[in-house]
Length: 523
Image 1 (cartoon, one colour):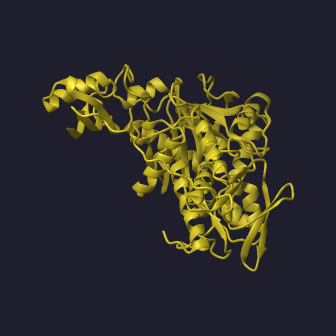
Image 2: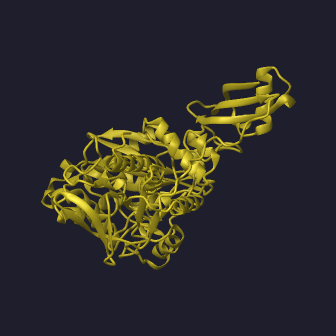
Image 3: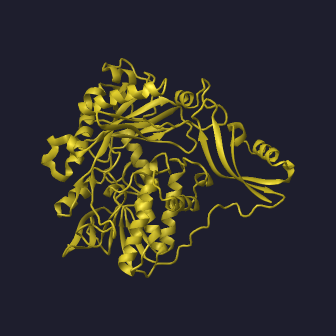
């Protein structure tokens, strides 16, 4: 007999298979030896009370052999070698999932990626820390997998399209991600595992007859009579077909190109702040309500912080438990940081972006830059931090309480940030309306979460790449640009996603919209 159960148990039961089986046998009143498998279908941590509990959804096989271990039915990708071409600009989550969906629908994707393969990107990212060299086409933001390739690989989203989310997770699993991502409430892959998954996706696209071209930076659009016919790359090559534009939130040259070619764009709100780094053990103690931290069974603790200060949101972003902070510049004269975690979330640090909502009306002094005002605002902050650091990627830093109280930090704690940090007045480097809101926000977080506001934590600046500073407007029904037929703005770079899963969902939606344009299919 197969039993489906929803139970609530202590971590030492939830994460110990033998003990879980014994617990379930008692619940069901059956001999433990008759249980052939307790298969976990869903798992979430409830740390709201002092005693942390784990919620499990189980399928229990009593005197019955379980079916296949796989929780998904793999997608079969047809051969599209002779099908119509669709050009996908960008090989981040939006672009890769758009390409896979195009193959599913019988279309041939040609993926043009300005950067290098995911393996080659590692070397270029290391040069930023070791040699202060930023390759403008191969860095944290650009290259196969996009910004998500070297991140925590967080796969949870606020999207309410559960079927779409489940499909995205299933595709990741089909390409090598752990089955745990199908189970955990807050799934993640990890920066050490995600590159192999991305390579497997590329191999699927190529095996089906599609193309993935690296070091192929788009420099112009072929526009005729309010329609896009193709793109031109830096080497002079031209690719014709409908265009899915999935270039990510940092492709500033593309925004300049759209503006120059009179393709409608508009400024979009962003969030700006810092990376905040705590000792992971401290976060474990706070979140799990224990002076001993997480103990033997619980994973590295996460947190999510949100408040409003003077009419704007102040919140944590891209929290990386057991992770490290990395340099994330994508060009010269920039200092910007981000965070990532390995799959085991095993470092002794926890970090997250701590940012303040900034809307276009907040920076009237930038109105002269028109549609690119938010991007120019980002650029100026990154340049200010870069100059303060002596034109290196050794980042300004300030202890958390010192920042809130507006004073110098005479010393700094150890950090995960490889290029190093130096004491600086981040409260003065950031625009005052951002710094003041952050100071008030941190004080609020400290009141709500005892121990969070501490000089054991350090602010490392700056964090500016939370989302695209530009939106490329599109028709709500066809997903084509509002005035350029055949152009499908997609993902984070177009202003329609905020993270790996939401970008992947939008990539699939754009692929379906292209199929509708070509075949008249309706989804």
